[in-house]
Each structure stands twice: as C-alpha cells, then as structure tokens.
Length: 71
Image (spheres, rainbow, N blue to C red):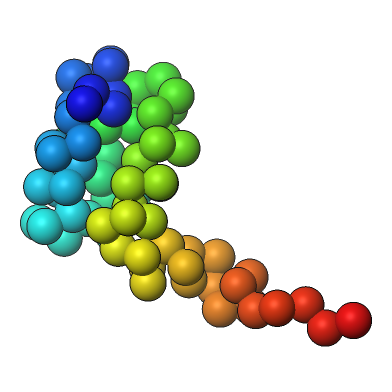
C-alpha cells in the first residue's frame, strides 16, 4: 500500500528503511524520503513504526509519557 504519495513509498519501503536502521519518522525520511515533502503521511509512518518497532514507539516521548497517571 502506498503510504507517501509525494515520494511513492509503500509500507514495505518503510519497513525496509526500519530494517536498515530507521527508528523514527525523521530517520525514515532520511532513508527513503517518505514524510519529507508535504508531511501528510507522517501519522501513517508513525503508526507503521508502532507496528514494526512497538517498544521504540512506546517510548518515543520518553517513559514518563507512557506511565499511568496517579490520582
């Protein structure tokens, strides 16, 4: 499925970028160009990163962002 229409990058292209070391949206953009033009696909790339790298996505904003709130 095409994720980035500007650069014609598919989900498999993004997965390939992750296999080559991309761990966030910015590094995916550097590896394959997806998300580097209009930015409309960046949320979809982030979702794919959550599927491909669930631990990295869980801590993208730091451990405190995922910690449960205390009443």
